[in-house]
Length: 227
Length: 116
Image: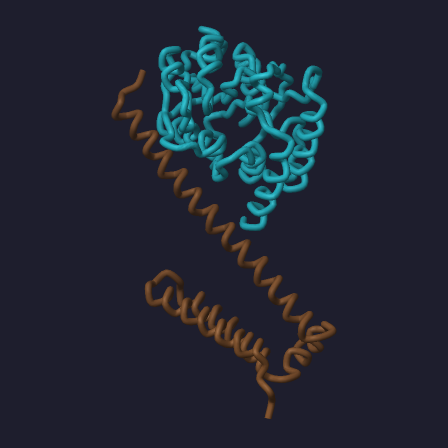
């Protein structure tokens, strides 16, 4: 089986190389893997750093947001026929050694999607983030009928079938909830595994703010009305 | 003979000005038949309601609203909400098209540059 590891990145020159280099050389159950960095219109040396770390890079001419970058990743994975795709953040918040954990859970449960949940063991997560994430989980349940412990997690694994079925249409942070909308729409099976989140001043500064929650909710409601 | 107020004159002139803009946009093929009809109905409807004494109050009572002024206020707010929603949908669609374009360019660029 061929694995594609996706790292969406916007101005992550400080951390991207370290993240790529922390990916284990061998991943259990995978014959080989490739790393794709979707450089979302960065103005720093993200592209250069990622290439020097050995990753393939596709660059957006202008910044389109997390949803835009993930949409490009899905399109790339479809065109190049990968069997499994894993996404993780470029700010160092996720431990690449846990990629294997997600893949094992995905294959053992024969699921279509595996979510790495930071909330199954939220120790170390700032309290305001716990509240914000919980609120968005409730909104995801109300709008899409799926309960998840971490609707905003960026650490996910997708099967061959999920890569082909999931259609990303949103551009910004609301993509995380949109993925659950797609899981529900295509009746995909999904599992969750606990992951540890590494919080640094840098990753906290780069991550989602609670104030974004209102914009995400507004856009998700409008998306629901429009569909 | 009914006295015409300054408000009625200004509003009627403004309505005709706005309608003429809609016709221009239609001639330039920037709006559809449906949009032109909608704007024609809105502006002529408004002028009619403003010009005929007691008409707004009558329509308001039919809809269960106290008086014509309140009715006009509700209608204006509803139109504004709808317009904002339509603008939002259109802006979103434009954003989506830009993203698609940026995506295709990014994926083609990778092929040409033969990155590792």
